[in-house]
Image (tube, rainbow, N blue to C red; front, side):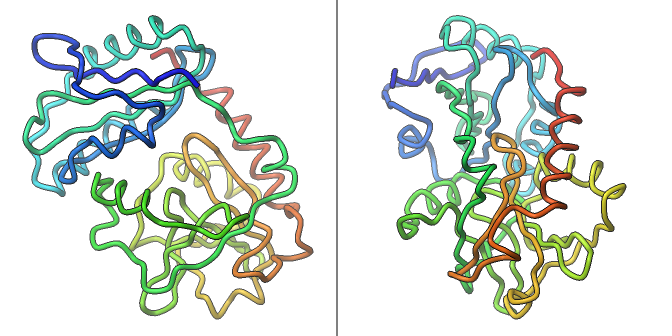
Length: 275
């Protein structure tokens, strides 16, 4: 894969950084531990989804972390358009990172966007729970968690680890929000996790399909979970068919999950905007 593009957006304009990396994941090791960030992808090269919501959350994360951040959104958009156009990759996945030391100089990192394989959506994925793994300040999307997450080694064949509170509540994935259908309700944690941008869309499209309850399911509920899925901005709705070696439902993406994903994709198609 081509090297990713990494530039610093400074008051003086875009400037190169003093390192290179082949991916967003590799580039993360060079970014500060005490910053905040957001990640998303483009559609049709220069279209984005809920980009201002990403920036709202970035500003909120900075506030929670005590970082003074004053985003110039028009300049940020223009800088991203410039880098994406110069890259010539088409759709990209990009990260915006703010450091505590230089909050007026944003790190912009881009790589070619590769969506999950179709079989991920068709067959679903396997997850494991990580008991006692709840984050200290989950409402802030911080770079120290980005680094911690990068060091987590999941067993082969496991797509995502699910963070669990001391009480056994399944709060979120390491890089996603988690949902379960239980007793005909869509359940997802209302506290103790990072509110997701994709989650905002789920809360719009789900109520006509089934009731939504913002309360986490517990590990003890696993045998009764009818369906499950995770969401993130770059992946949308990903069905979960197994947790801790136990099949969810009949071990295939469920009917509610399929309907929700179709509604999600329709909403996305209708709400894309130019960067």
